[in-house]
Amino acid sequence: MKPSDLKATLSFSDGSPSIDLPVYAGSIGPDVVDIRKLYAQTGKFTYDPGFMSTGACQSTITFIDGDKGELLYRGYPIEQLATQCDFLDTCYLLLYGDLPNAKQQTDFKTLVTQHTMVNEQMQFFLRGFRRDAHPMAVMTGLVGALSAFYHDSTDVHNPKHREVAAIRLIAKMPTLVSMSYKYGIGQPYIYPKNSLSYAANFMRMMFGTPCEEYEPNDVLVRAMDRIFILHADHEQNASTSTVRLCGSSGTNPYAAIAAGVACLWGPAHGGANEACLNMLEEIQRMGGVDKIGEFITQVKDKNSNVKLMGFGHRVYRNYDPRAKLMRESCHEVLGALGLQDDPLFKLAMALEKIALEDDYFVSRKLYPNVDYYSGIVQRAIGIPVSLFTAIFALARTAGWIAQLNEMIGDPEYKIGRPRQLYTGSVRRDVKPVAKR
Image (cartoon, rainbow, N blue to C red; front, side, top):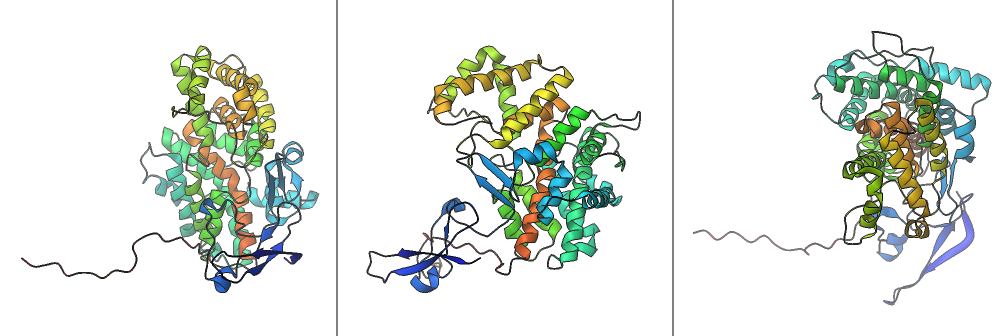
């Protein structure tokens, strides 16, 4: 990374001398002002709650242009990846920087397939959880526990260890998610089947039983694979930043990814599609399609706490590029399953139509986002709402690992240490308590 010819001059009204700060230009996107020496030169920090104007790292993995509605993985548009590649191709791209050739594709898929089983003791670890535990609580524990089973890949500073951990995590996450689901409903675990694709294998482990052979539905498998691709990475979001910050301490990859899983659990982040389905079910309880107008009125009321979930996005100021792709999958799945007339899905489509035509939402660019459609698709497939975020974590693991590897390999990498604006008491002395 080299500074551009531009410099930013920072001046102060208190008479302190002004300073020049380097400006760096990325390959695309906004320039950044280098403030690393700001405190040393001025004795001052910057203040940026939520880090909304702060670039915490340099990265070559994912780029988002929220105004254009653009998402690129390693330079490739998400629209092309979702229609021309599968999830493991996307994983390879995120990990290694380029799409695989034919041999690399075969070798990578074989390698992942050979690591889908988990240590048998993991099922005994699972039994320590209550049957009604939230899947994300279970997943946080299971992923963190992997470091207790795979000691040979816990040195985050060893490139070979990181690569082995990456393969293991990508391979075993579907197994762990399906195990947490089966445990919760009291069914036996289904072992992976190496002859199936990544997404088909996951669905078999989720919905298969020892009673009869599970036959994957190609439409549903394709939709699930697309969900994985669309959620594989999303730049420096809360969970990715958590993985980077956690990993910056030198902790093992499994612990860093477990931290990402825990962060993703939050309803403001990975729980968005779960919130969408809960909203639709609440409208259904109110009276269904006939009550949409009443619901929309409540959403527009500033004094109401009612929110329209699944519309608009914090990053995308325009249409979420993933939403169009997920909408296509949504209609394919509903058609394949004959669910076009299902009351909840009819409600979802009616709400989408009204919101897209209402000037209140259109003027604010509150278009449906990927979470709106992915929740509908997963429910149609038969996945319980409580498991949505665990599937999000399964997909995002590839991006988390790629981001962690990039950070550890960065020569400028340091342990994360944000600063603060302290507003507490100034120094004071303890006064002895008067004795009676």
